[in-house]
Length: 316
Image 1 (tube, rainbow, N blue to C red):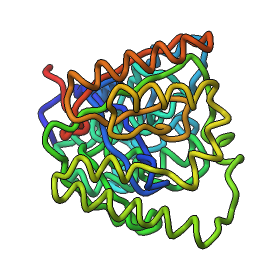
Image 2: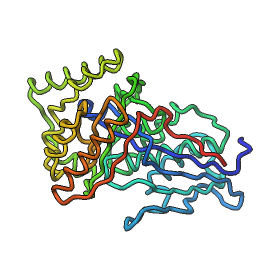
Image 3: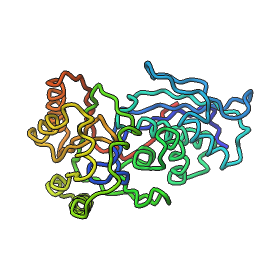
Image 4: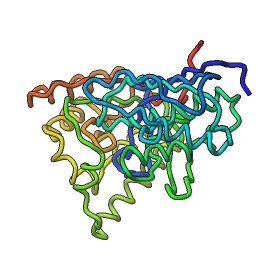
C-alpha cells in the first residue's frame, strides 16, 4: 500500500461527441474540472463521502451508492477486496452541472484515480475505466465512456464499443486549440437524449460516416483544413440545437471569426469551436460570447489546447 495518507487530484472537463462521433468521440480540456481528495482514516470502516463543495444551489448526495464519485470508488474497492478500509472522499466541484462538459465524468474519473493512488496504484489508468463508467450510469442512466475516457487518460479518444470499453487514443494535431463556451442555460443529459430519434435515413448515415472517417484521417495526417471540412454533424446537432437559444447565431459567429468547426459539447448547452491557434480560439470565443449576449444570455469562455494528461495528482 502507498505511504500516502491523502491524495488530491484534478480531473478535467471534456467535450464529448465532437460533432461527428456521438457517444464514441471525446477530448479533454485544461479547465474547468473537479478536485477529488481521498484520505485514509483508520477510525472509519469503509468508504465515506465527508465533504462536497462547489455545488451552488444543487444538492449532491453524500450516500456513496447515489453519488457518481462514490459509486466509482466503491466498485473499485470491491474489485480490490478492500471495502473495509477506512477512506474519506471529498468532492470539490469546480465546474457547472448540466453543462455538457462532463461534470459527472470528472468526479468519477477523479475519484477512482485518487483512491487507486492512495492504495499504491495497483491498477493501470486503462483498467480504471470500467469503474468510472459505472459512476456515469448513476448520473444519466447510460453506459458510455465518451466523457470519462478522455477525462481519465487525456487526449482525443475513440470508443469503438461502449459495451466492451474498446478505447483508442487518436493523434492530436499540432496547434489545435478549442474555445468552449458555457451559456447560463441548463440541459440535463437525459432530456437531451429524449429529443433524439431512434432512426436515421441511409443517406444521412452515409454523410455522417464520411464526416467521421475524414475527421479521423485529418487527425492522423495533421490536416487541419480537412478537419474543418469534416466537422459537420448530420444527425445529432439538427435535433438538439433547438434546446440552445441562439445556437445558429453563435455558430455563425465562430465560423465567421475563423473557427475550423463549431458544434454542441456533449448534451449541451455548452458549445465548442476547434481552431488552429490559441490566439484565434480566444477571438472566436469572444465572438461566441457576444452572440449569446445578443440573445440575452450570459456565458463563460474557456480556451485550451487539447489536454493530454487527463487526471493529474496534485502536489501534497
